[in-house]
Length: 362
Ligand code: NAD
Ligand code: GLY
Image (cartoon, rainbow, N blue to C red):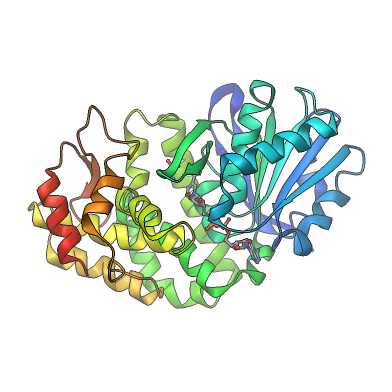
C-alpha cells in the first residue's frame, strides 16, 4: 500500500521541486513519473540496494529506454573512476540531453549519480530516490553533488538540483542499525544548529526513532527536509546561511579522510565533529558545558561515537581541515554554536585552538 504522508517544496523558482515522503512510494510510479524527462533513463544504485528495490523502480519505467548501473557499496566508491563508469553507461545507452538519471540508494549513490548528471552533456535531469535515513534527511535535498579525492572529501563536485526527491520510508526497514544511527547524527544536527524545539522533540522521541516507529520516522524526515528546503531556497550555493548545515562537518570530513573512507561512517564522523565543534565553542566562551553535555548525551542515546578514535593524528586532522571548502584565503572557518539551536560561522579560527580541542577530545 502506498501512502504519501508529507510533501515539501524546495522553492527555487523555475527549478522548484517536491520532496515526497511516505510508505510504498517507489512502487507507486504515478507519484514520481512526471519528474522523468525524455526517452532514456539510467538508474544508478549499489549492490546492497538494487536487489531489494531496483525492480520497484524499473517496473514504473516501462515506457523508457532503460539501463541500470550497479556500483559496489560504500564511500570508497564515491570516486572519479566510478563517475567515469556512469558516463560510459550513459554513452552506451545513447542518453541525450533530455535523458534522466535516477539515483536509488544512500548518499554515496546520490552524490555520485548527481555529479554524473551535472556533467553529462553539461547537465541532465536527475531524480533522487534516497534509501538511507541520512540521504532522506540531508544528502538527497539541496543539489550538492560530488566525489571524494584521496586528499579530501567532496573536493570535486557541482551544484545540480534534482527534479524530485522520493523518500519511500518502507525502505528504512532493511537499513542496518549502524546506518540508521549514522542518519540520526544528521537529524541531531538540525536541532543543534537551528531548532531548539526540534532538539527537545528528539530527546522525547529518541526511543521511538531507534525502534523505527514509522510515524516518528516520517515526521522526523519531513521536519529535517522542511528546515533544509528553507535554507537552500534562501542560499542555494552557500554564500552565507547554508554553511550552518555543515555544523560538525569540518572536523567530520577531516576524520573521514584521515581514518580512511568508510572506516567511520559519514554520520559517525559528523557526530564526533559536532562534539568537537561544541568543545571548541565552549573553549572560546561562546557556549556552556551544559550545552556540550546535552548534545553529547543525545548522540550517546543514539549509539553514536563522540570522541576521536584512539591513535588519530591531530596534525593530520588539522592538515585535512585546511583543505575544507569553507575556508577562504588560507583562514580556517568552522561552524560553532552559542548552544542548542544557535549555530554561527566562526571565521579565522586559530590553528592552536583547534589543535587543543583535537588533542583534548580523546
Ligand atoms: P551510503 O550511501 O554508503 O549507504 C550506507 C550503506 O547502506 C551502504 O552500504 C548501502 O548499500 C546501504 N543501504 C542503503 N540503503 C539501504 C537500505 N534501504 N537497506 C539496506 N541497506 C541499504 O551512505 P549514506 O550514509 O546514505 O550517505 C553518506 C554519503 O552522503 C557521504 O558520502 C556524504 O559525504 C554524503 N552526504 C552528502 C550530502 C549532500 O548534501 N550532498 C549531505 C550529507 C552527506
Ligand atoms: N549537507 C550540507 C548541505 O547540503 O549544505
